[in-house]
Length: 396
Image (cartoon, rainbow, N blue to C red; front, side):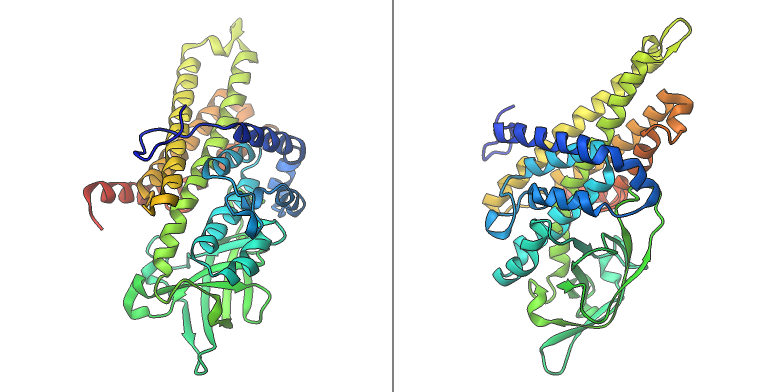
């Protein structure tokens, strides 16, 4: 592969640094995460110890400049890290994704210098956990209908925030949160503003923890705000810019979720290859059966197509750093195809493994459960198709 030029026609190459990063992350994931993944999935406990180790390795702020506590690497490095971690455990990769993209990208690109040093640096170093809070019980993909409110006090010093947010990844353990809430409800989505929330101030309440199908060690909960006083200096961007910030951040986040989906798919595929070679039936390995071969061929093809779409999205995001252009379509295509690939591949993996694929004695059923969320969070597959089509048609 060759490096991208300004035309955007080419895909990024893996540099020696990228290869070294892949080896570093792969070795760590197999040594430290693989032995505990099933137990943490069963208990739903947040894996704080390994997350702290990942922070010490620079993995919690891969694209964040070194001045703000990060590793100062590129988008491809982030995607490669997500793939390797997700191949071992999707829960760890989810926590990694939120810190790097949903929280880190938001503060890096829209925060003030003070906000970057106070909120971003500790998260990028892995010393604190970040979260991103957009969804509400009655407001998912349609952010313009959110019911939470932020009202400026009479002194003009604080916004008083009230409301309930839902499905907040890392909500039960987050130290800092990027919160989106209404400051001018009459303007619908143009009245949404973003705030940086210190989770240890009065009025911040962690709600019920969600009992989830998959990514169970990635803690998810409601967040409740009861007269939470947020300093005006903690507004991220300007009043009314929240929706624009949220959508920009989701563009970046979707590349991470695409990479996560690819990692899950690769793990299930590699296990299926091994099983197809070793499992004996009717006098030979099941890999000799044409129906199994068809599954292997389809799984491999979709995995490699997903990889190319992810690499293309990484290249588009890198170009955007220079040009300011959006990379929405590339990110949405990568997320859409890779997430549906993960679901297809893990389903086929269960089928290839037969009864053993349905048993918790093997990780195939966990990969199957983990894959399902990739078609939902950070924009459902239906939303991705809408985004891609509207961009292609020139609709806004």
